[in-house]
Length: 629
Image 1 (tube, rainbow, N blue to C red):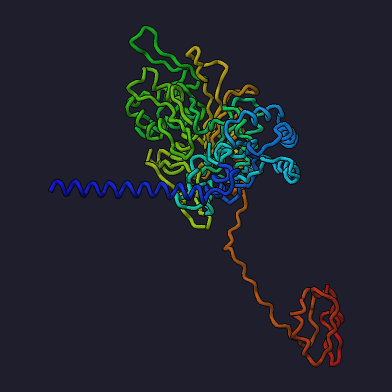
Image 2: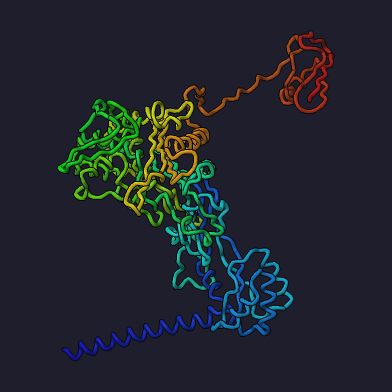
């Protein structure tokens, strides 16, 4: 029995081994016999035929943000080069390269094949083709390659990302959706089979992106900051309509951009939000029931709490606000009021509410390098942690986290997943995936959400957000000015700030969220209410007009959307000549059969003159003349 079992296993082993050897031999022969066109064929050409065409990236309306194009690369098959110096000279002139360096590269190349330059311009290709046609460059070839073109160059550059010289995504959507845009070919796809990538439609609206980019660029010139972040989102869906990070990247020269420009700051950079965070603190405390809209706190210009130590903890406020309720804490951006209000909740409950708002976790938007931010567990808090967190310090957030948390106020307390991709369409027009509104969780009650929007509205009327107000629209606004922690001293800087502003509008039923952060401004001012709020207002004005959001005082016409065209009555001659003015020849036709009159028609168009005049009594044999123009 054991002997038979051993024999069976031996047969299975031999059969399996034989199949594997045959498979290897088959693949080797197919590569050698079928996939090699000539000894000079480059590896790049094979790769590009295998990967096929990379799908485009488009905005929500189908306007192209990234698209594939066919370029040329210069290659050398070194054994065929007869005169290295002459070849290097011609190449240096045609491609504007260093001749001596070319000589060294060609002479010292250990292999047979090399790239001279990848993806050259059409002008360079034409200059080189003259020499190739004249047979002056043996061993040199122009190889077709696929490359990526970005029509907008720096528009939405941090979202779109970049595909490198081998047409592989390296950043942004190009990276995270690389396998969708450029799917890997099948093992048996064959040398000649084309593989087409799918089309990725973003939620970005290119018009809104232009508005936001232009306004942020002007602010960058005006305030000379280290960077500016600006996000425009659709409040009811979480779709990102505009996404600006300056300094930006010219995607046609991505590789040469400094690392600081390539960093995707709206998702990758965490910073202390400052007083903008008060709307989330107050909303949390209202929801927990420790305060209500009538609860008062005394601001004498500072917050003070006694400890077991000899000296009490004191945090200064921006002003002496007197008695403040939740509305005035937000409108006046009162640090002391927010800090005192935080004492009404336990550390654990306050921490849990902030986690429900999504702080301390990534948003999950499909862009690489997203930060979690910093929200330490409440067990690690000091005595002053809760009051300082309530006013927007000792916590770090990303701009995208702020926008996601703000969706809570626009959706009756429900937080939405921010979305940057709208749909994915195959190359033959089939819908592969379509994203929809994605609620995450109920964070606060609808009543609390509405109350906070009302408080933010007061900030735009009689508070620090006045400069964010827009004609005819009720704006819900919160500004912020946060000091930047000096890592060298461990203290907050007295000169480096982040000015920010968050707005939802119209406040009665928010449709749009705008958030901006200006990092280290060096001119005019460093206060959010002075420099960030006007930037929000400028973008909001254009978005409101573009989307047709009604303003107070606008005349709104309700129309069913259809027009009923009445058929004109058939013209009949009675006792008197009618007024023919404005009639067409088609309308005149019925009277041509009337035996009493003779009708003369001159010109084209509509009746402009007639004889006899309207009202003349008709007599037998009368002639009527009509002039058409």
